[in-house]
Image (cartoon, rainbow, N blue to C red):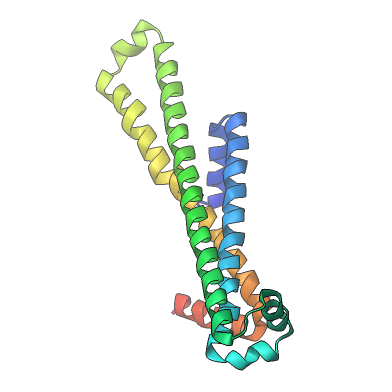
Length: 196
């Protein structure tokens, strides 16, 4: 059976030690993106709670401290502040997600270039007989299209899969801390839909 971990292990053999460091940097950005997206989700919760029930500002200790810190006179101004803060965090989260996706694509493109160059260099170091025995169009196809297929059909999807898995894990942890019963119920429902 083909395993994703076996695939990742084989990919790590292909890339150079320097690129492995770059991959770690990209994965760090992915983890940071997941945390920032979670912060965006968390920032919506107080806003929606105050929007649904403005009197909660007078009973929740966190909101009381924030309301006193801002020194607003009315609940409407405070709701507008919470809404603006939520929009700002979500906007920053989106910008950071765009930046992270850019870095993922940049890493894939650099790997495409390096693999194509390594393969071409390997071909150019062969004897004349090597070229006589092979069709030049198949060699060109290997350098161009096979490398593209490896990158865009294998490496890029694996990186995207890893990034989405990290985001899902972060959101799940957030949901578990927010409401354990709701998280278990939701997970059971989603898993039951998946297997039916």
